[in-house]
Structures are given as C-alpha cells and as structure tokens.
Image (cartoon, rainbow, N blue to C red; front, side):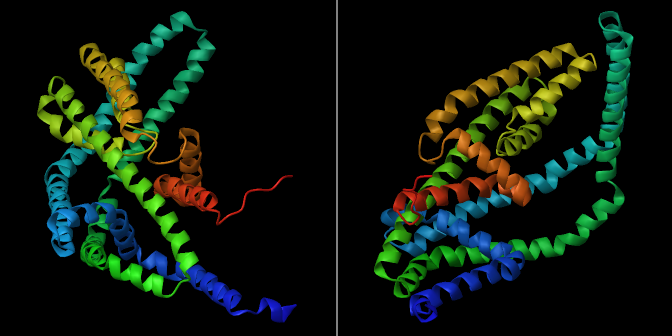
Amino acid sequence: MFKRLLTKKNVTLAVFIVLTVLFFYFILPISIPIVSALILALVLEPAVRKLEFKFGSRKWSVTALYSGILLILLVLLYLILTKVIEALFDFARNLPAKADTLIAAWSSVEVKLNQLLPSSVTASLNDEVQKFLLSMRDGIADYFSVQNITNFVSMLPELIISGLVFLVALFLFMLEVPRMKQLIRKHTYEKTYSRGLLIWQKVSTSVFGMLRAAVILSFITWVFTFIGLLFIVPENALILSLIICIVDLLPIIGATGITIPWTLYELITGDNVTAIKLALLSVFLLVQRKVLEPKIMGNGVGLSPLATLISMYIGLKLMGFIGFFIGPIILLIIVTFIESGAIKMNFKI
C-alpha cells in the first residue's frame, strides 16, 4: 500500500505542497513588493501583448506601458505629498472644532425630538450620540497625534525602498513573462500546462477586466464629483474629488460613503443649502454608478454580485482590508478550477 503511494508523481506533489506552505508562511510576508510586482505584471500581460502587436517589439511595448504607469504614479505622489496630506492635516486640525459644532447642533435637534418622542427615548438617544461624537473626535485626534506622525515618518525609508523594489521588479517581470512561461512549460506535463494555461487565461482576463472597469468607473465618478464640488466648495474641489475617487475604488463603500455623511453633517449644523447640494450630488453619483456599472462591468468578471459580496466579506474577515480584493480573485480561481474539470463537483449527498 505504502509503496503504491510512494510514486514519483505523489512525491513531487507532496514536495510542491510543502514548499508552497513554507513560501506562504516564511517568504511571502517579507516579499510583498516582489510578489505584488509579479501579480501586476501578469495582470498587465494582455495589455502588453496588444501593444507588442502594434510596436512589433516586447521591449518597446513594456517600456511604453511602464512609462505610463510610472507617470500616473508620479502625478499621484505629487498630489499626495503637496495637496492631499495638507488637506488631511487641515481636516484633522479642524476636526475637534467641527465635532464641537456638531455636538452643539445635536442639542438643538434633541430639543425638537423631545417634542415628538418620550423623554426617556430622547435621553437614551442623546447619550449614545454624545458618546459617539466624542469618541469620534478623540479617536481621530489621537490618530493624528505627534507620536503616530513620528512613527509614520520613521517608516518612510523602508516604504521608499519597498516602492523602488516594486517598480524595478515590475519592469523586469513584465519583460520576463514569456521566459517564465517557457520555464513552467519545461517542468510540467503537457496536460497540466494546458489546464493551468486555461485557468490562468480566464483568471487574468477577468482580473484585468475588473481592474479596468473599476478604474473607468472611478474616473467617471471623479469627473462628475469634481464638477459638482466646483459649485459647493470650489477652493477644495480638486483634492476632495480625488479623495472621493480613491474611496470609490473601495468595494461596497463607494463615493457616497463620504458624500452622505457630509450631507448629514451640513444638515445637522444648519447649512441647509450646502446639504441640499451634497444630497443632489449623492443621488446623482448613486444613479450614474448603478446605470454605468452593469454596462462597463458586463459579465467579464464571471462572478454574480451575491458571490462577489460574500467573497469580499469573507476575505475582509480572514485577511483584513486586502481581503476585500483578494477574496473575489480566490473565488474566481476556484470557479475556474471547477469549470476546467480540475476539481470534480459531480457528486450527490
């Protein structure tokens, strides 16, 4: 029995599983920049092949695409270092005063509620709201404390080195993808390679389509948000629209995750005109998202909205924030394995 199990194929599979476990446990935590660069290079491979067809050279296609990515990153870095950080510090500095204004405004709301609800209900509600507002004010103030800022500054050298490693590794991986495919093909059976290639093509196409659709939708959201904020807060329209655009990339939350709380704040503090403008902007962003998302997303990703939501939630619980994005990808890989026949599901209970 033992000798029949001790075949070359089984030994190779066991060694592969052990090395994979060791990699995920020891190597992956310290290789995030390199692994991220590899994944991005593989996701960008369809775009590289399209440009290679036009340029006639992989080196020039990789250089053109990489230069575009680098230019976008430099522009974002410039905006973050010069505008966004300044806006965030101004927000943090003014937050205690805004929270105090909100607390005072809530007191007037409480008076109106006392006329509509029993005093015991309004008292309990007031206690909870007061606790929430005070904890929010103190929590954000502590988050932007001198100690946390100092800790962040001390991490900058390591972040810069990791960023440079990521950029260099990305360029080299983009160049070496064909050789990596040849190396994998050399050390795998033809059936294994064909099945793996089929799985990878579907996963990479879906992931690339998902990323492309997310970027297009967020860009459209940024345009509409920027135009809307020009009529609300013209002096900070660019920075606020960029922040809302970045938040819009987050699953489930979306742009209205900022505009709706902002609307409620303006409504409670008595600025009804700004609240109405923000409410109209929120409704418009929500409608345009629901109208454009099905058309842009289409069925390219290959997952239903319910399956995507469940995978995002489980990913969040298991892996934290990054699980939001990794969860659907893992589910997509599992679905692709099932569709390719690598995982058999023809059973009954």
